[in-house]
Length: 619
Image (cartoon, rainbow, N blue to C red; front, side, top):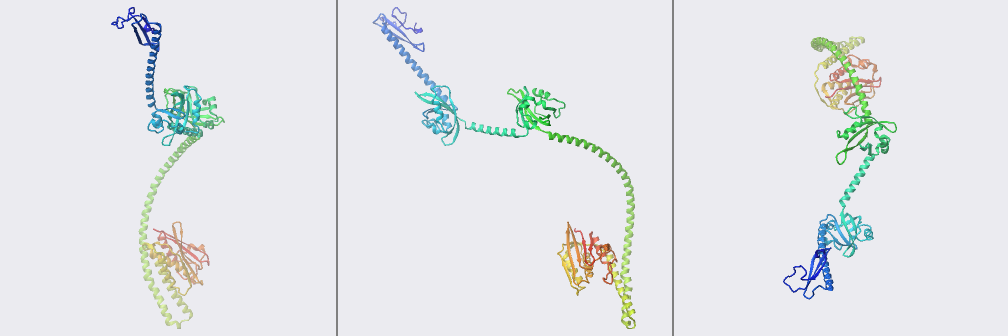
């Protein structure tokens, strides 16, 4: 009965209960169970010496006492459990990765260590009793509280808000608050969790910017980015450039099927393959990264070539469910490729033609080589003849030297004798000879002098062809000054104006170059003798890298049609009675210049003077 929660009353002797057997004088007993949550947790025992049975009023009093004992025990157990629960909650809250708090009228009444850490405080005590409105940067922090305060305490729905939090050092952080209304210590309060989302927001903002950049690139590039699903053979993404490329929008492409506008498929290295076969292979995982070329017909009727570069698209299990890739307009590339193909074919034809021509030329060369062999034999014969000619030339030069010696010595002696006897005859017998005789004697004397000068000029001309050239750097200004002083000394009575430039140096034989200047200056003086004022100019011109020297006068000049005769021996363009000379001076000038590898020429007009130009190569 007791275990069933019912009290037991009766006489002591009649009850088969072992309660203090030593007390034989007990007359009545009561057993009242103490209950908690419907279970017997204790038993209240009462025995009496006075009554044979427990009176009713005592029974009621005992049952009341037992009930009160049960309530006390229940409260003690409840308090213990509550303490244990609070201890467990405190441990959970203190080690939580989110901030927990309870506030009343914005004043912080409870928080965990994580909340203190989020706001930069060392411990919880620094935060308690702080006004939460001063820890949140917001235009209206009361809004969250006012909205939550309209709810009943204990409602499960919590409100979520994001604010800028103010840390202990004044720096700002992004926080997320999840809060609701509760009863705390018998008063209305706000309970919630708080998370630092600063890094998350930074990452989210970076992702947003990255997505915006990616979207801008994909929407503004001329290439088409896509993702194709194999089960439906439709695109779940096609960038806007598909319209520029094909004339169709993404919706239209999916409606009519991209395959319907493909006229030809080319897979590099894989001949005669269809797109269906490739899709099948890709689903089976037999292909990885791949490239293809499609010839399509655009909506406007234009044929275009598209290049496809794609990769398998797999789900989380690794199964291939589609492909992602990029389509590019390669029409110009294909057109260039076709032109190159035609060019190569044309080039092969040209190579064949040129090969045939080369073979023909080779044949002709072989024939020419035979002819060249004969020619070389002729050349050898000619060389031998030339060597013989050189020997004869050397012998001729020796004979010329002998002749020059003879002219210099053997011819001069008779001329000197004729000139000497003519002069002696004139001096002793001039009073016995008439005028005609005197004239004849003068002609004899003049001609012997002229003959002597002619012999001197011929010898000089001959020497210029045989003398060894010794080249040095020549200061043309010093050399010109020297030759001019010498030349003008022969005509001291004449009025002569000479203009001389500062001349660049010349590399040549100094004595020979001096002879060039002497002959050209003498020539200029001779042909200006009838001018009231003779004008002579010596200068140079530079054409490209060549230096051209010139001697210019204002003399009688000559007709250019006879210019070719000037530089030949004994050639004269003027009467000897007016301008004396042997006609050898300019021939000497040409020979010297030619031996130096240069050239000489002249320009003139009748009565307008003449200009003689010459150039000699430098080192």
